[in-house]
Amino acid sequence: ELKVEQNPLFLSMQEGKNYTIYCNYSTTSDRLYWYRQDPGKSLESLFVLLSNGAVKQEGRLMASLDTKARLSTLHITAAVHDLSATYFCARGSGTASKLTFGTGTRLQVTL
Amino acid sequence: NAGVTQTPKFRVLKTGQSMTLLCAQDMNHEYMYWYRQDPGMGLRLIHYSVGEGTTAKGEVPDGYNVSRLKKQNFLLGLESAAPSQTSVYFCASSRTSGGSYEQYFGPGTRLTVT
Image: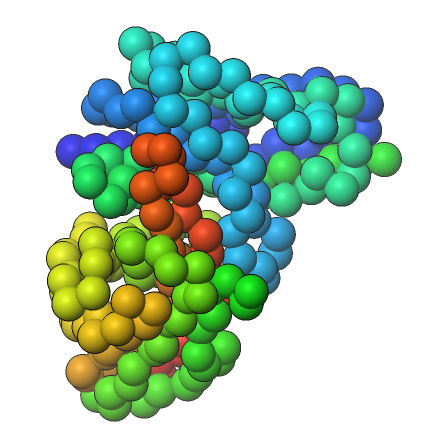
């Protein structure tokens, strides 16, 4: 069975701190996606990781992929309140890159 | 460009009623998808399409049917709604674009079945 597991499920951080969200998946894939979702809103694409060792950065967020360990990480540097949201990783498979989502990590950044 | 749009935004149905959700995209994408999101969970794939006139089952297809008669539209039908189908439904579209298949999501339809 294909599984995508994220941890932690909930993360409360102080502004200015660093933290990492982990995404483990059960079967090999070379496509890993990160999305952000604000309450009551749709999903916003953050990163698309297509190969082993891929690293992408946008602002205070950096995502990486290790296909051998079946692990992706989303690192948050010097968190700010605007980063408060739920973050999902998703593994892509097949011709249409059908997505299997993790359960999400709800990030709360406090002042 | 409007991107991916969904109609309606909200709907309340009684058990046994039927309805159709419409998804439209103006990005000329080949692939389209329907997902559902239940509270505290990630999205789960219901059905998808790799091109006009083609559809395929996803992870949770039971109780739903789909059609893609035009490239830009993907319809999701519930023939006989059940309370277990209360959820938020998201449509998405993508193209190959260098192998990334990055999916762009619509705003969602919140469906309640009583």
